[in-house]
Image (cartoon, rainbow, N blue to C red; front, side, top):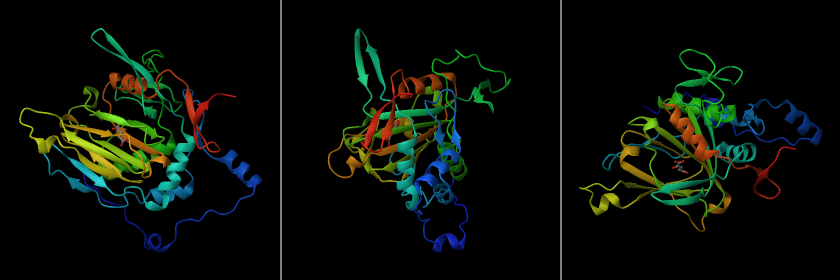
Length: 320
Ligand SMILES: O=C(O)CCC(=O)C(=O)O
């Protein structure tokens, strides 16, 4: 997988980033009505496509060469600092935080006779479908080989197509890395109290050596990685390594990274954490179990949340 960059025109190096022109409120509402949107019966509300000011510059991603990090046992990373051009990372963060729907999933796990209630400590949302099926032009789910519609109750939670605003980044990243992905998971960490504990994305439905692209937008947060314990692990291998993920950065985790390493975003105080952080991951689920798992843990069965710009927080959203 090489990180070949698309050729840049000379103009693009010298022209300043597009400036926002002042608009009248009439212009605003006309423009809003004309904005193309992604819609689907499973979406609580339509999701606008990215504005051209963002897409034009997104075409220049990756903004830097990926740095290979493979100097520890079983570790295989490409670290882009940044991947998304600096000129648009703030606007892309604001856009996705404002326009996507999120969930705060609760679920229970049973270990032996003990059932524990888990409140996911971050906002989540997910789009995509595993390799056995795809969406037809009307958004219906069809079998990938026969092209025949898949029964409505084949999946517990009806799969959702990837909205264009995220699909564009998925396609561009596929082209740049040579990887293939059919799922987009989005996390929103509202503050340093939101987190994800040590885990690895090593489920069987991802295959044995999955490649996962993981983007950061917004606040910088520490990404901790440590080798899974093994019989021959010494202290230095289990001590975590820290990547200070900043806005626009991307980590491509591949090879044996998921089968041998754990990663986490721990809770934090101070720094930029009050700004909120979005994490986007692209993954390839091979079988139906992957689709079931992702919707169960990232959509769940609770209510929808949407960003409220006046309150500066995610608030419960209800259809009017
Ligand atoms: O937020 C991040 O950078 C990590 C997210 C993650 O590990 C996950 O979604 O599995």
